[in-house]
Amino acid sequence: MELVPLGPGFGVEVKGVSILDVATDAEAYKAVRAAFEEHSLLVFHDQPIADDIQVAYSRAFGPLELTKVSSLGQNTFYSRLTNTMNGKVVPPDHRQVLIAQANALWHTDSSFKKTPALASVLTARVLPGGDGDTEFTSTRMAWERLPTDLQDKLKDAVATHSYANSRDQIHPDLATELERRALPPVRWRMNWRNPSNGKRALYIASHAYAIEGMDDRHARQLLAELIRHRGRQHAREDIRSAPRRHGNEYANRLDGVGLRVRRNSKRSDAQEDNSQQRYTSIPGFLM
Image 1: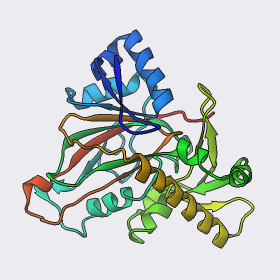
Image 2 (image 1 turned 45 degrees about the vertical axis):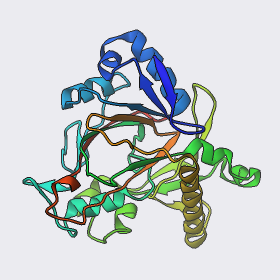
Image 3 (image 1 turned 180 degrees about the vertical axis):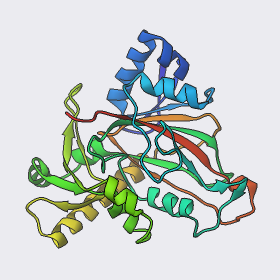
């Protein structure tokens, strides 16, 4: 197995091992899991992608989440990310476009759930001719680059996360009443330690809106600055899905990576602006 660095500090392309190998061979899984723990983000190019293959690969890492209510793929293992319906790109005010805009906020998958995610697996099925990148940022490096006094301040800090908080930033009705009831606010530490290597990561997201022991205004200001700081690590590392290829697969450990999904669908009748992706998520990030 060969690991090709994608940027300074985190993220590698995996060569010589396929996702089918990981799903069926214990030694292949062991090697890929070690790379996953060390580098946080794994990229597999030109894979034989289908829903059952993605699930088999994902299950190697642990049991899978069921997709939440009011989502494409609800109560299945697959969350479908798309800007097309009935073969056409949807208009700018369509719910799927608004969801894509919310996904363009820096976030950590499933931080709004009672059991957050160990990892998520994203596959590219149909991609636009231009733009449409999925961007990743290292939350480990974001933690390492915080001033020591701020690390001390955040060492035992706890933030409140809510799915509705990130959706309300896009449109007040984007989160449905069913979603708001099914996904009440949850509390998580603002940094996590990976038990396999001892490395800490900043654990925040666009879903976070409050910090225990801090008034609302100061908490939101600090969270906004931390998210900007995390985004600056993206600017330095610049890990993206380019070159865009059908059959790319990305696996990212969610105590080390933040992400945002960028879309460009200005021409509503342009076939090249189609975008279709699937992601599966592995719960169990409780350490």
